[in-house]
Length: 125
Image (cartoon, rainbow, N blue to C red; front, side, top):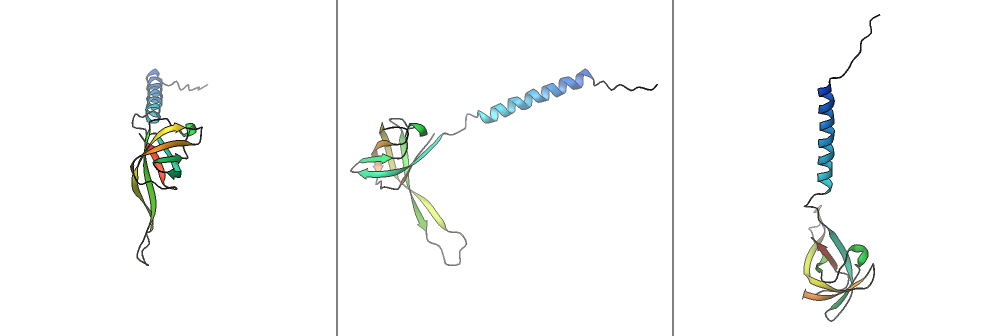
């Protein structure tokens, strides 16, 4: 009777275990990166004097005191045969949240610039 038993060496088990632990640690570091950015974006719904209503609220992470940059999307004119075209983002100013109504809406005051309805307000940190 010729029975062959293949028993892996203990050193190989240790190496595989260490590799699995290292892989798990690297995956955890990638998802909890300190360079990860929080992003909040919403539309300017209305403007009255220096007061604006934004379509951002507690569901988006809006808090009183946050300053959001405001952009307007403008169409880019291109040559008739150009393949690239579309829109560009034009910085319009900044607003500061002064009141959060609910999970969807907030009131802000214009800090700088000329803000119009349908502009886009966003916060990045």
